[in-house]
Amino acid sequence: MSDILNKVIESREESEKRDISFAEIVSSLLSLVRSRQAEILRLRHGLFNERKHTLEEIGKKMNLTRERIRQLEKIATQNIRQHKNFDGIVAPAKHIVTSALAEHGGLASKELLVKSLLIDEEMSELGTALEFLIDNFIDEIKELNLNSFKNGWYIHDDHLELAKQTVAELKDLIELKKKLLHQEELVEHFKKSDFYGTNQERFKNFLEKNNNDLPKVINSYLNLSADLGQTPFNQWGLNESRLINPRRINDKIYLVLNWYGKPLHFREIADKINEAKFDKKVAHPATIHNDLISDSRFVLIGRGVYALKDWGYKTGIVADVVADILKEAGGSLTRDEIIKKVLEQRNVKPNTIGLILNKDDRFERVGGKYKLKMNNE
Image (cartoon, rainbow, N blue to C red; front, top):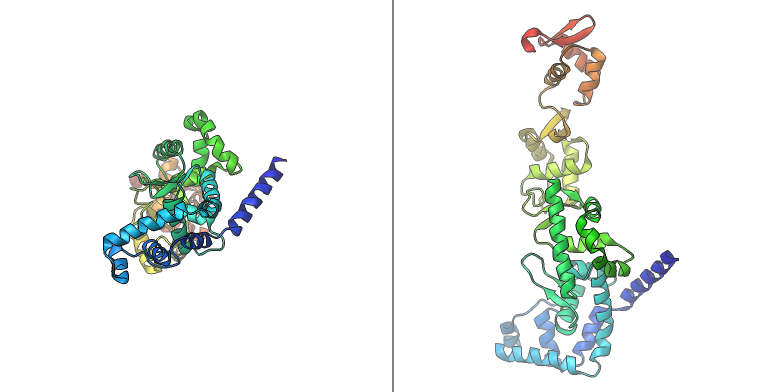
């Protein structure tokens, strides 16, 4: 029964979003004041795909001083708020925005909030309209402006405090694991933490409003953090990490191999980097190949196919791998045993391994098995 109710609620909320146009609300508010005052607000806040103008630019356009434009902007805002139709016009926007923030844990970055409300309007137009409404006419919502957080909005100081503590816990989890964590994995670790166990009641109000979607709340907090960042594969880590902010191509290579979790041809790695869109730079196969060769984190295991050394792959040519296998065995192995172990490390044909066993001076055959010669042990 609860699932049906949740679906009804979600359907109603989506319908409310479709029925509301933030641009129309802004137009209605501007119609409450004189045309010159409306024009000043439109130019000052960059409304309706207009760029934001400075006080000086607007002053020159209207042949007025900067200070007079500032006064008129303030008067226009006051006149709108004092108009008898103000509450009725702004109420739908206030409801939708406060509900969206509550679904995200009481606060969200400006970009995330705009995306969550985006249905029919263009993102740039919705963003400026939303910023204009919230910053000037929705008193229940406060602007978030802290060094530890990116720019955003929040509803209540208690929500902000919970977000601060949650981000600190998430940061501790990432540092404890000493690796990038996919968001799903990070949320699972968080749910098992003592912090979440102690503070479940504080999350309850948000979860009741978003169909118990804890990942939605965590994602909002993560996106606000100035200390944490994510890869194109939704893995989270410290912003100071070279993997979160890869400046060199070999870091992008590492991230791609780490994410896909299997050896890849250098041309395929180039394609994956370009698909991920780390930045505007295009990855070329030749450049990728050069970095793969020169970086000890990568191991060539076949013709143009590379793997991460972290996965246990040994460096060197195939004969070196055979030598290491025999050395670790501490004795002799059959041809088939050696081939099986080498194929775990290299993408080569079994016959190639057989030829190496018979031709390389480091190996000798004794009673149907192979071992390292005495001077190579």
